[in-house]
Length: 142
Image 1 (spheres, rainbow, N blue to C red):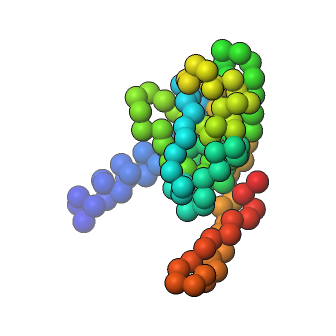
Image 2: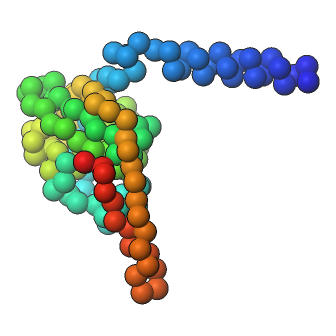
Image 3: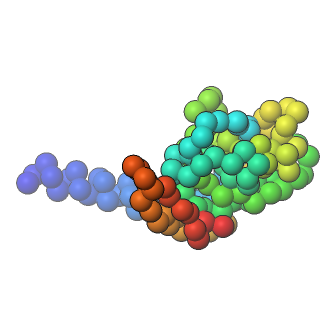
């Protein structure tokens, strides 16, 4: 009991600091974005659409809409988080090919960006039996 109470107090303090940041700081992130061409399935289980307006982020909930501004050329696009990553260096976002085209990332491959969270994700999935497995239909994400 003597160890548990300080531990819970410390965890409570950490949680309160993590969730009490000002809205501007909590909803905006600046760093390097890249674009990716990946496999068939994203981390949330949906089929990857290379021409879709989606992105991978390490922590934002699936379905979260973000506005991404390429700080090198001023272009912006709205993307939906449906995957995890990036897992390379100091990058903060991996953008689908469709998003990369709109942002002007196709040639350079990476660019400094500002990512603004527009709303919390509302990921919902319905699973339907298909022959020997399941197929997921995703709605409410866009």
